[in-house]
Image 1 (tube, rainbow, N blue to C red):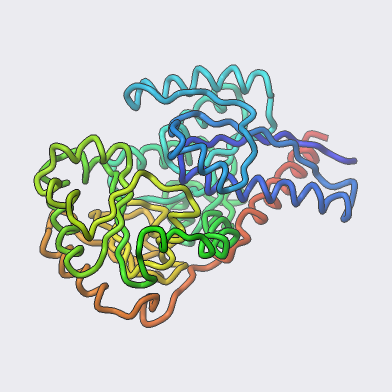
Image 2: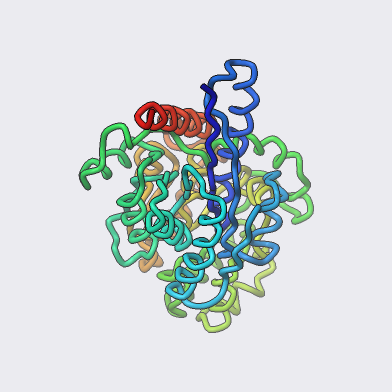
Length: 392
């Protein structure tokens, strides 16, 4: 007997879009293949909800365009206020959507406030939750994202893990068995689909850059940008790097607000060798990241992407929830409060050959092969079939 299940996917921020897009494509592919394979297989309807946590064109619309995502079926507009107020706004608005749509499964991704809000709301309405990118842990409870990860995983029925250490983290918290599925990394699915297209763009040429001869920087974590002294330290690092090679610095909206107060920011912003830009679309940023000599960041997703691209990455944080990018990839964790240590690490990376990766070659963690989303959809179908069988 054919079964059609409704999947409701929740997205909120740029990293969310990169994880949701391949899952939506895989759902479409599953439905198409089902017609060829067997009319009795599970089919899916999908509904996309955008919470509005990233709401301006640079942070949202341009990503939808670059990734070829459809317009959201529901836009919640929860973009204002403190994290607590935003969490509450998402819950109140999403409740009405869930009551109207009555999905068979709510799919949340990543670790932002909207991820937890959606999981909480679904569970309160007795709707099952699937968490894409489950099990990541930094061990730092001061990070809002860490709380979001732990609570979302505790609420989820299906947990899709990107790496083996995530599965171990879940097991240590008492979550194991058929509810946890090792699928790989859907962000790498997106990278593989769009890498060639990104490299064909004129991004570097329009900035006057040459492949392998510039550094790329992103900063947005509160621990790095909220304190003017700390932001000043990192601005000083970028100014030093700019004496060796050009630095491209797309400024996150959060960071831009803080730069005016930061020591050393004035010198950085007026350096002729520093390209300060607005936040970039996915394709332009991927083009820059793929051809950089060095990436300096505090972003989680960038750690993963640079690993697959074979580009040296310095993560200016004291912890990472993606240790596989350090043990198997090109990422190096550097204490952001030790300016001299960051500079030493940056000079070492700049002295290596472009695109060499760790030990002279790019590495890929297990199942980071561009097919994670297909595994996610197959696992959901199997779960639907089991649930239908049990109900029958």
